[in-house]
Image (cartoon, rainbow, N blue to C red; front, top):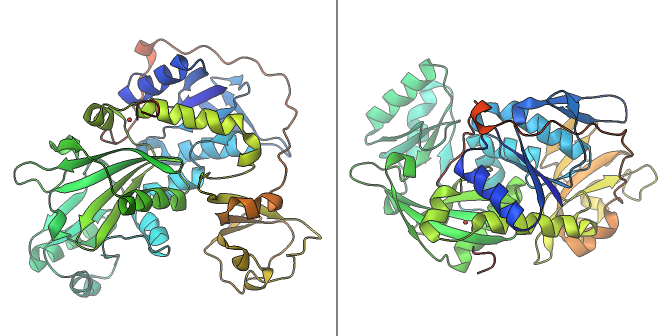
Length: 414
């Protein structure tokens, strides 16, 4: 297997560990600086250049997209997808996970436990919104933020109203979220690879700090999650379109509450805490997917329990053309349509009465065995001879940093 790790920082712990794990397993691996790509587009032949040279072939890509380059980074991952190269995390999944509101909107439809949350813009809606989530104390979050930055605790309604008003005056979009009192100062990081939680830890805030992030001084302890928490973490990652993810959960009185799904979870905190080889688990999983490509035809996810997410095409002449999603019989076959792609239009959670047209692509969740016959065979493009990309620059020449959550590794199947 030839693996590309997309990272702006080859020196950071996570990137180094992933590269070491791949090399230890005899895999060919290169760390490619995400911002050094150029995306070339022409009819029928999407292509990529790296450091002004045409990119050679890779079997798989592991994106480590920092928050500061989300737009360009997801565009690069999307180009790899257009070139039919297997990506550990989809571009859509990375984009969805970076937007706190969008990720909660997606999870809320799928019966995943989340803290009650509201998003308002009008000043008159702030007080009713606070009341709807249970009143003060209340959590206020910026839509974009990592490592606990942009997360505030308002002890009273008056202070919550003042904070929201101040942030909105600065053109900031904020979420108002229920404060889960029984979980104050602690949360769980579950590291998901494929359909398994390969490592998990509890993070506990210190002193008066309510944020448990290690960057905020939080302490960690290894834990073994029960089935309900493991299932919630895996399902949350799958629904977001991520095969490798750090899922943060609160321990609510009524069960696990997902607060965030991280598409570029750091390895240092969880490997140090659990003493598990999470990097090795990721590389083993990727190698398994590349070794069995017939299972992964255009799949976004793979789960050994028989369920996963796959992209189904509706070609001209298909039995589904002219039928609504409801009348297509997909639901009766335990196949749920998550997203409909029609030309350049993306329709998330399409209504059941929407009529299917030739050329539609359906991102579906269901039993892989039932979906397998509906997935088109992969056609590998014949590419012009590639000029080998330049070798990695010395570490000293790298100036970009990867912005990932470092809190977010099993012995190789320990």
